[in-house]
Length: 136
Length: 297
Image (tube, rainbow over all chains, first blue to last red; front, side):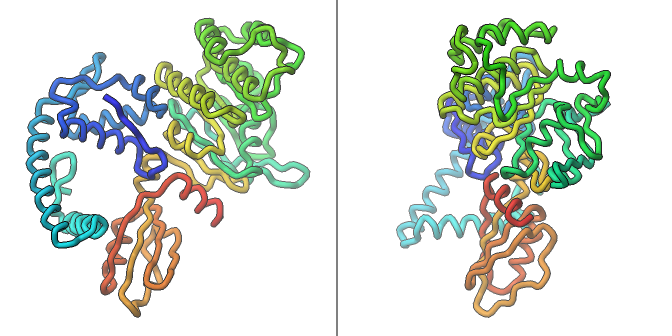
């Protein structure tokens, strides 16, 4: 598994690492039962703080993506695979929508703004669930 | 029992009536890699020398491992547990690499021969060469070797990668990370390279004019800080008072740029309450946080 981080993007590194693990699960690069690299190895490979890796793994465990087994490492959980299927469906829906809107002449930037605005609105009105499962 | 490896309260120090530290409060959590940032002359080296017991503060207190650094009876105990890389990378110039290693070793009961061998090899240090004939980069590496091999619980590193080329910098950072991961060593390091701080530090402190102006967990800071770009409708009056957490507001025509240090959701809500506004949120880099604070202090 190859992770890449962008330290100067302003996005906390543990969030970047979490996103990449989740993305890998969504694309099938990581599957149920696969083992994630050890904390020390990730820290050395990416030259990043080991505490940050620990934090990313803990949050992923909290979100139900991985399971931390004491002494033997981190594994992708079964339920993460089910989640990946739901996300696959969502991707297809978004893809169809993007194609339709693009055919109406909307640019990437315009779409991004509309999407982000809609998400912010939904968040403000409490219609969005949080990563841990429940609604905010 | 303290969870802070380094703790100072109200440190002050002046040189010829010129204040270098003006009430510095510093807390370095156990097991953290703490990036100590500040402009030249902000007081970084004075702080580090005070922690090493090389300077005595005019007032205030400093503890390392919970022991007051002013406690002369226990200063050896503290020093045996700390590895240093000083800013000037000064070592006895007439000794060879081999000699300084053999000279240093007996002072430290927990000396790690395995680490010594590993770094002599990795840093490609010529054992028979005199320190006077080493390049600045090689001296940095030698100091790191001496600091790391003593099996320290705390590394205090004053610009450890200064003078190193990018490949050597990468090597050094990777080793620091490996040591932190394997032995939980606390590291306190100063640097001007914000990109490297952003990678390996989990806590940062920004010192300016002898005072700590920002300190905390880097991830928390990045999560709390955001830049908002707000586009207002024509003729809209900006609020006279913004919600707490707005660090600055810059207006250019209908576009307003806001740096928020906390309370972002409340600030977005306030901006949205004005007619016809569109708000975009952007992440903030360490560089932006640093520049904003030292410029506005």
